[in-house]
Length: 328
Image (cartoon, rainbow, N blue to C red):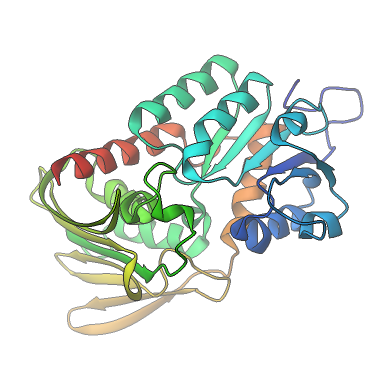
């Protein structure tokens, strides 16, 4: 099927979304509301193997399919959002791509660099929009934060400190299973590494890794990275520490950081600076990163605009994640 409306008079038709795994917390709390709020999108269908009969997608009038494959093969959707455990991303991305359906898939896009490269090659061969749903970079404060640093707002960057920790209590959560793509680093590593790689480059030396394991998953990973220009980065991912999010960038003329840097809300608009010993605050426009992400992906499908997270960036993060795991 074509991912772009092609019949006469349909150029302005909304993008018909199908949600695969519609019982997912993130799908219900953020993605489905974003689809419903975007005038260029329509929640057309969903499939869930675990959800009951009263999911938010039901209340929105979406058509329910009995399984994922029948939704993909129905011809009734132009794009799918894949909200499944990490180990299921690759097979369902491949099936959707073979059907000619555009794909936005929850992070991490796949389990390792080879799988991400396979997805990128398939997307290029099929000429399909395929994106990783890393929503943080769509938040306007995050965009302003990165642009400010790259424009020299704190001079030359010297280092980055990033931490994303929380206590994952549920023993049935798939993140506790290595076979399902669990583990702290794979779960939140994209949040830590994406800004580091954008600000410092993609080829650091992994100089130190400390991992705590529980069975076949890491419950905590700390790593130190050294970059060719002398910059350093330290990152911490944990399922067993109290909740904390930190993103602090140090430069020759000061430092800059964000509150709630990785899961920002509409109300998170402030950027906190310390220059020449004096605190300053910058303000960004209020924004919902999920709404922005859905709107920009819909535009990439229907209007051919460039989706701001190319698969090359997803691959760069996956490669560094893999190197950190191998260095442990």
